[in-house]
Length: 166
Image (cartoon, one colour):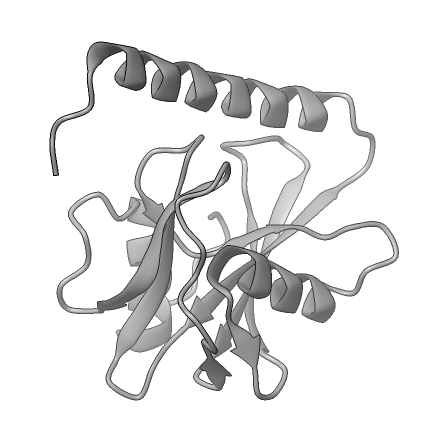
């Protein structure tokens, strides 16, 4: 794949900066606790589904905010559908609750885990939010997989004690 030109790199950097700024402003003006979900989707071959956002560096577990009037289980199912075209065969299981101080002092993330998901067709990427998405062997993650994602995998698969901070 050819290297992107200077204008493409600049556009990507500006898009990433705008996305981070919007996230921070949205959280700053909220009251109460904000709640997000992440889905750790594993295959029987020990592959994990990861996404690379247009506005954050690195590979992450898919997820997002819980909408008003939406249950956390419905939110993780929606996020998996939106970000990875993944359908759950049964509800994902709640694994842990984490304080996400990096984004906001009121932000909490619920981590759900499932081995019961299928992808009827590949995720439609790249798009405005997701640049890359796919299944990766847990022992050969992309180099840019975030430290938090690696810690969650170690908790779920490696037996590390669950943390309280994302």
